[in-house]
Image (cartoon, rainbow, N blue to C red):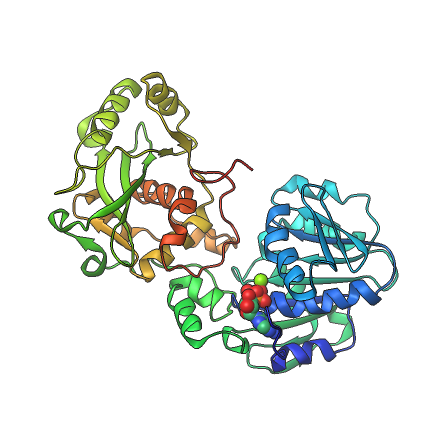
Length: 445
Ligand SMILES: Nc1ncnc2c1ncn2[C@@H]1O[C@H](COP(=O)(O)OP(=O)(O)O)[C@@H](O)[C@H]1O
Ligand SMILES: [Mg+2]
């Protein structure tokens, strides 16, 4: 990458006297990572001696999101990667890499004495890890850099850290200062996509369009807002639903996604990739069984019906193979056992990260890259009423209401878990911060 002069906001950020935390937050692709890495690299060369740490959700995301870009910026001789060792060498100094995607992660740094730390996508890490990291910065003059995308208004990173910034350069470039007795030694900079002058305007446009609803307000407009209203607010029958008879030609059948219930409906949806010049995803067909109206089924009977469904015809003109993968609600242990017992192959636990999955599906809907044939009646019926849970929102969490979400879940499982199979075929700009670590097409982590 050829570095361009930093935008005004980043220069302003770099010219302030050093506080102990430099927090760069705001839109995706706004230049937060590049600006912080430049500052961080300078700190590695000139800061106090001692241990250094770089942290993200997993060691792999740290390498992909931070170390590879640093290698590009400063050259491979200055940034050496020792894959699998958990350590990189930057300007001759060892830097430890930490993945922190669960509550136990803090134990990895418990005893450390750090002179500096860099935290990528801080709002996606456990608060306990961040708190521990901060207490480990015990070398005099130690500093911490973080980048983050906005989440809900009650997120710990916002209420306990960002809101207490001594200096805040907000999205509009205004400088807001707070007295020392009510603030932390923290500088906060809110970046917008338009602050990044290095990007092609068409790319900026596409990126903006690929987010909708709460994701747009957070990841594009850089607002820390609650999720409310319809989850898939861009879903529109006129745009996304097609008559089965008009299903485009299919290049590849990707998977079946299954959500399983004993007292609730069971839903299976078949996901395909179209053979169009600009390929799209399409839900071709749906199996749905509602025990309330059609009686409870044993697992053996569910398995028989699901296998018969998967074996059927799901395209008006093409003879398609069966879905090579069946991606199932990870909680549906008994159905998985039954299907396997019945000789069904290609069974995978669905990656069940609800928010990243919703974000991904929402982006596909917003960019008209997801079609649904009118055979998928359960899904079409559920999507408009699939809403964020107000009660959860009040507690500072983002979660959809857990009702009438069976085909919606099956759809999300299929899309999110198989993304390694279709991502490159689509025009997709969304950052992969929370890609599933396992799923068809992915090497086991
Ligand atoms: N100063 C810069 N010079 C050149 N390219 C830049 C610069 N800042 C950002 N970019 C480009 O913009 C992209 C997004 O920047 P990045 O720092 O990754 O954004 P963020 O961390 O906010 O998502 C980078 O991949 C890079 O191509
Ligand atoms: Mg970034």
